[in-house]
Image (tube, rainbow, N blue to C red; front, side):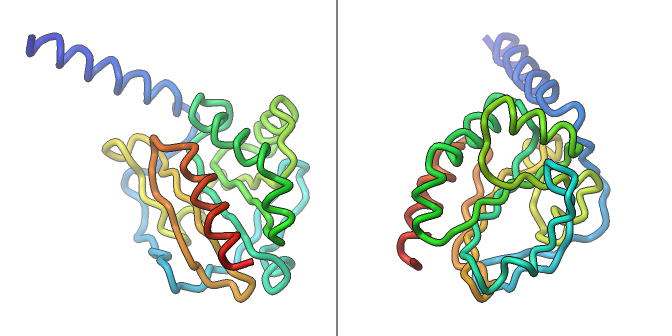
Length: 184
């Protein structure tokens, strides 16, 4: 029985690793900030899925923000989360909120992901994990997988809520909707 549990555990870790093989997680990365409720978000610029430079300052003060970090384009959990945000896009827009997804894949990977799943919001390419480090997004599963965390940011640029769960992918959208409607 112990051997079966060990083999099952190794299989799961192998599967998880295979879903994140191109992510480029740095296990011994430099010290990260930790953005928490009450923190102002750091200013940053990244390329979106169309190759255009997106500067967060262009939307601060104008929109509430849902900024979610996810591990990898087209992995099962990330696809489910991305499509859930897509399906609730109008509800977020009606609450004056902008959805921004960030992960470490290339602009081309994000474009293919967005087109394949008809994603109607901004995806930002953080290939060097600079913004992930600015936010202090933790890794999970012993550092093998970049973290999945959603920040709800008010128009003043202050984090009013965050939800951190690698496996409860649909709950990210539900929690974000609940909080956005409260601050609307």
